[in-house]
Length: 245
Ligand SMILES: [Zn+2]
Picture 1 (cartoon, rainbow, N blue to C red):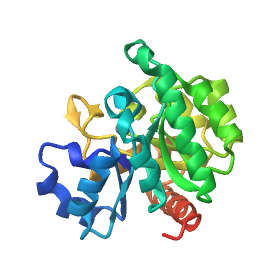
Picture 2: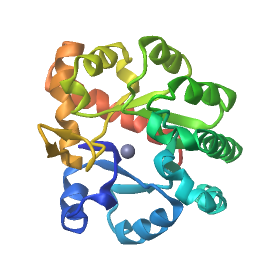
Picture 3: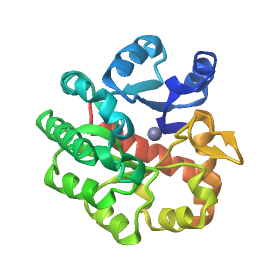
């Protein structure tokens, strides 16, 4: 029904599934990993009205793509949706941490100067740095922390900073994921697949399967399927109303 964070252009069968994604989902946000990928993907996805493409620069590849920063800033001026952006604090990417941080800061600064964007944010292992920057650029728009895996205190801080959270079926399969989801206010949650990277039992999650988080939310919120769907639709509308979409 809704997929707020998918790498739709990176599924091996992307072109074959576009019709189904467009039909099954009310709204899909296809995040991209570089502004060039955004330009190319936007052209291919253009005719699918329920699929929106956001311009990003993935923190894991900033070293290779830092030369696209100016292009990214130009592209941000022409769209409401930004992502995937953010910071990855894992050891694997420690060499680029300063570069990642400066690019993310520049992106937030631009989003703020453009009156706010919907921003899908990667924060793995760098939650406190990401949150510090979000509090510095508090008018950057609507930050959505995708697949948040930080500590409870960081989650509480993020909620205070008016962050949103996109959660996926893989998170619903871990104890930590479930305990974080239980602490997120109902009106700040949206489904995501994070496919083709996220998997459940070794199966790639497809955009129409992001909604499988509903069974978990039914238990946590203690309400039925219809109520969960209604809440998620309200959440989507709330986010979109903040832009001109
Ligand atoms: Zn992602």
